[in-house]
Structure formats: C-alpha cells, structure tokens
Image 1: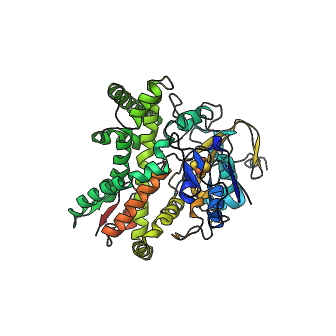
Image 2 (image 1 turned 90 degrees about the vertical axis):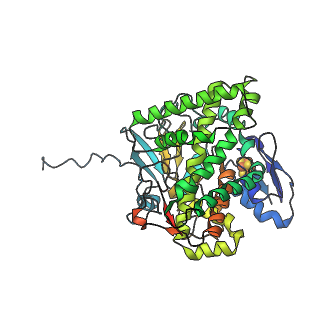
Image 3 (image 1 turned 135 degrees about the horizontal axis):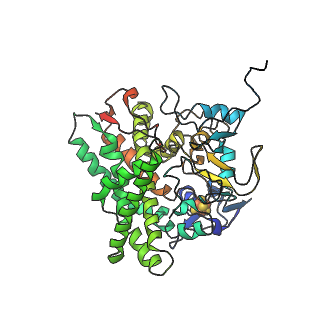
Length: 64
Length: 409
Ligand code: SF4
C-alpha cells in the first residue's frame, strides 16, 4: 500500500487521525494532515482505507 | 367539465419536513424515507415562498457537500437564505458562509485550536468540569433535576468560553441570544435584533480583548492575525460569534438526547458501563442516530450539475437533509436501530461533509465521550422524571434536542 496526500485540500478536522493515528498526524501550525508512514504495514491497511473513505475533503489517496 | 379545477398546474411543493413522526421523538421526519426511494432530489418551498431542492440520499448529499461548485457563499444570488439557521443577514458573515480561497484562509487561522491532539490535551479539564457539575447534581438527589440546565448545556458552554476567552459569567447573555438565533419559529425581525445584540456584545468583548489579549483563541487571533493586518476587528467578532454559537448548542443537545436514549435502553447502557472501550463507537452511533442538524446545510449551485439523476441549474438552492442521509438504508443496515457496535457508524454526516465539515468535531466527540461515560458511571439509576410525552422536544429549533429534560435517580 502506498499513500499520497493532497494536503492543500485538507480541512483539518482530523478524522484520519482518529482512525489511523499511526499513519496520520496534524501539523502544529494549522492542523493540516501530515503523513507519518507513506507505506504502512498490513495491520494498518484497513484503518487507512477507512480514513480515506471518511475524509471529507478527498485528501487521502491509496494505491494498493 | 369547464368548472373542474385545472389539475395540470403542479401543486406548490411543501416545506422542509421537520416534525418527527407521531410518538417517535427520536426519529427524523417520516417523509424522508419515501423521498429517498421516490424523489431523492425534490422541490420544497422556503418560508418566503421561494423554491429550493431538498436532497435526502446519503450518496447525493456527499456529492453535493463535497463539490465546491455548490457554493456556501450566502451572497451568491439564489442562495436559499429564507428560514436559514442564524438568520438570512449576509453582513459580516463568518467563514462558514464563504467559499475558498477566503474560507480556507480564515478557517486555517483556527483549525489548529481544534485539532485532535489539542483537544485530547483538554480531556482531563473536560472531565474535571463534568465531575464538578455531577457533584452539584448529586447534592440535589431526591428532587427532579433538569439535565439540560444542570449538565448538558454548562459543559460545552464552559469549555467554549474557556477556549475563546469569553467570560462564562456572561453565559446568560450568549445562551439567550443563541437560542433566538437558532429558533425556527421566531419572527425574522426578532431574530435580527438578537443578532444585533450578540454583535454588540461581541464587539465590546473584542474591544476589551484588544487592550488585553489573553492566552486564548480570541487573544491569539488578535495578536497573530489582527495586529499583522490579516483580519479586522469585525472579523475577530465574526469568529467569536460563529465559534460561540456553534460551540455549545450542538453538543448540549447531543448530550441531552443521548442521555435520554440510554436511559430508555438500559441494556445498551449496561454494555457501555461494562466495557468503556465501546464509548467511542457509541458516540459515533449516537451522532448518526440523532442527527440534530435539522435545517441544512444549504448550498447554491454555481453551475448546472446533475445529482442523482436530477439537473440542478446554476443559481438554484439546495437544502441537505442530514438526518435522512444518516438513516439511508443503502449505507446503514437497519438504520432506525441504535447499534453502538455498528462498524460503519463513523461514516455518518452529522458533522457535514466536504471542506466545511465541522471544525469543532474533535472537541464535540471528547465532550460527548466524557459526559456520557461519566453519567453512566455515576448515575446508573438515572431515569426521566416525567413520561416521554411530556418532555419538550425542540421541534421548533434548527438544532433538535430537548428544551429541558427532568431526571431523577
Ligand atoms: S480526514 Fe481528510 S480533511 Fe480531515 S484532517 Fe484528515 S486528511 Fe485532512
């Protein structure tokens, strides 16, 4: 799995961080998403897919 | 038959459905179910007689709210202002009534204040405030207590006052004015005078804070954004109005409804007491189930866009039915059942969807988790002090809930 972000679109409400805190974080200045792990281990895949599905601003792209 | 009524003239569409089904105060208006299957994008009349489209399906609602060609800018001609939450005045509007890039610029001035780690750091303080209010309730054991006044409203109200740097002593003022702004049955001029009164109150508050900006959201907006020329005094006041209004009534009503639902569902309450790790999912499910936003969100199309097989033309308004999306049977199995273990509960759109999705959602979640868990733990025998039919539900408000909730234990 490979994750890419279109962080310009991020509205910083943090749903991805709630769902997959080992993969996503928010930067201190403005809460915009940052990627902690662009190629997370298999144990994280379901959470990452869920975060991508829930993200309100279509920021998270997942390639499998 | 020349004297027959001409049936070719289509009947004027009805208003936005807002009344819960008779005897089911926890369910959204019954009309939504039929609309989802028969006419998912349907015409409605607004209070001033103008028309708008009503969207009722989950997929359509995500498509609309996720597409910035559906504008949030209340000054765009055709925006469905009539009867909207907070009034139709477009002067000095906050960023929720704007589009990018201005929306993005302003919203990002406050997003860090509500990000997950900042909110998590507040959890102990939210727990402390909740415990204090529960202590005060315990001292009143034996008499009926209004849970809205004793707990549901003070917790979010205290927290947002603290975060913004608004004196909580003034809560009577802003709670009264917020109530008027969110009423659907108030006359437009009375709502406008409440808006003016709130504006004057916040104007004076911001002026005072300009002299002595504290270590709080309004103080930081003043020192970091206003003094550097990014925003004006009026912008700071608009931030204050938006965050104050959005920050307490919403969570307060979710607390009241959630507490009541769990009092009526002792089996679920017991499961949550036994296994507190269920609380997080339970809060998502309660958000889905109650969907308290009953009057929008609203948009205006800036291009001709087809949604769910219906062409919405540029300049036409759209009202989105959040409670309907969250009971859409194609997304949520057995949608009218409260299931605190529902796997996809967090797919709800109770906080909206798209770039305007609720800025304070992390805070709302923590407040709900703390208050509900604390109530279940400390008041296991709590029950309504009156029959459910006697509880005044907020069918007259843009945010659903209970006006008051007498309880005993
Ligand atoms: S869920 Fe999407 S919009 Fe929200 S913080 Fe994460 S990436 Fe940004």
